[in-house]
Length: 79
Image 1 (cartoon, helix red, strand yellow):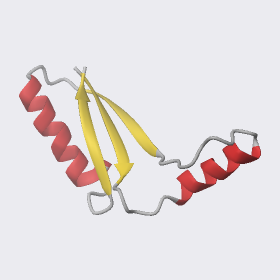
Image 2 (image 1 turned 180 degrees about the vertical axis):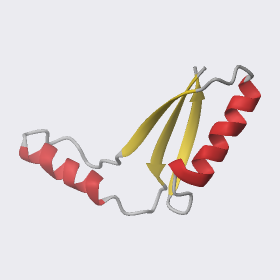
Image 3 (image 1 turned 90 degrees about the vertical axis):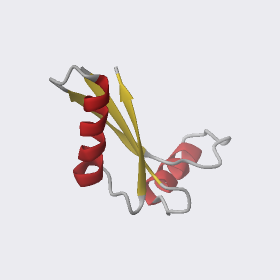
Image 4 (image 1 turned 180 degrees about the horizontal axis):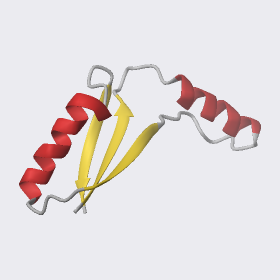
């Protein structure tokens, strides 16, 4: 089973990389971009076949390593 984890900064947390991207887009002529939030996507190949067990395992991975839950939020997508 595959799992995708989308990690983004929580609302209200400053995103300097997103701001740098927004500025660069403006410099390239893309004037209609008012804000950018950047994040990361992690794809996991799991041996687990039970959907609920896989989701619980990925949630534990996120809470312990993949996301800084103080400033980031995550969404799990099982494929």
